[in-house]
Picture 1 (cartoon, one colour):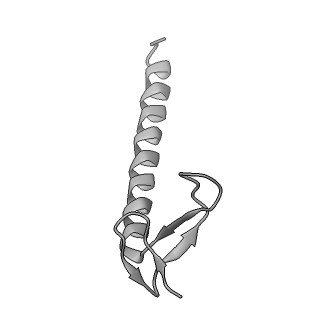
Picture 2: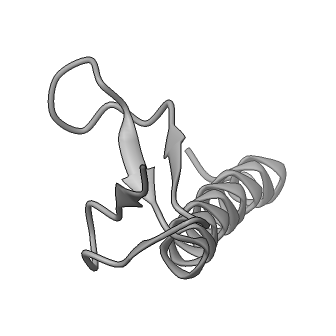
Picture 3: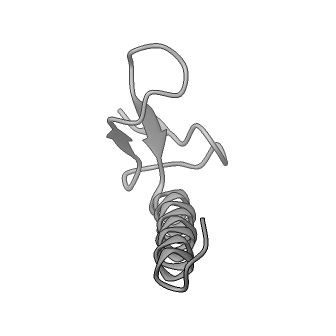
Length: 65
């Protein structure tokens, strides 16, 4: 039995259920392409948060509030 990707509706053997709970407690089925896209989104969010923290630390060092 093949799973169907919850994002793009691809139906093949490369779809996996990941513990990402967007709607209920069943996890999210993602194909390889969508897994990569979700990973990139998380990577960019992490980079943005790190940049924010770095800028905040620099502002404290420079005498900001």
